[in-house]
Image (cartoon, rainbow, N blue to C red):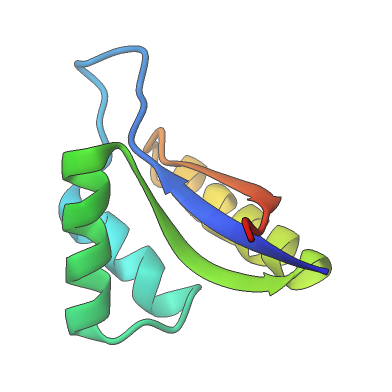
Length: 88
């Protein structure tokens, strides 16, 4: 069964945020999005608080979310991602 990997824009501390440039880099490096796709998804997250960044098998989705989260923590960003069952 496929699951969706979501990028979230929900920080409890408004003083701490993940830069748009970092989000685009994560989308390109971890999720293999083009520059245009990454920018579109980043803006979607910025305006609606979440975006589906990909639909994968469970193991692949978990691996990508962990890698992106680890990269964000190493860079001191509060970027949040989650994995949820695909709707439909």
